[in-house]
Image (cartoon, rainbow, N blue to C red; front, side, top):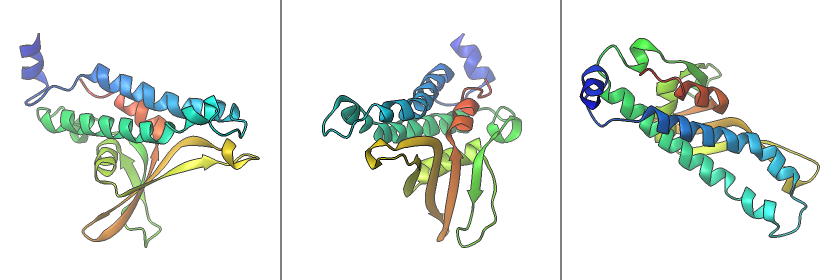
Length: 170
């Protein structure tokens, strides 16, 4: 079976699509739980929800990076005709190739993975509530970096990103 996979899909290290789907599930559930978790916070220092909510952003960043690397590796090792560019590359956000301009283009999955891997800064979409300690995350990330000395910005729709990586070509 492994030999058939290598002949049909892969020329390098194998990326398990089930692992990528599991990572995607974990990433999306953090966002979906953010509002509920933060409504449990009562402003008391070191309460249970306070302690747990401190893990949201580091875990999101870790999962995003893992998913991006695995997707890019799978795509880079794929045999011609089975890559994201040639076969399937869904839109998962917007890319502003030059932040000094207002023009944007659709951000495809492969390019989103590249931007995640090469980012210099990440900002979160935070929904403010009545109290500052009760804010929660929305599933949109703003990713920043530079390419050829030009600053770019990517708006990543995390839901679409998670859905897309769950349907990687096999």
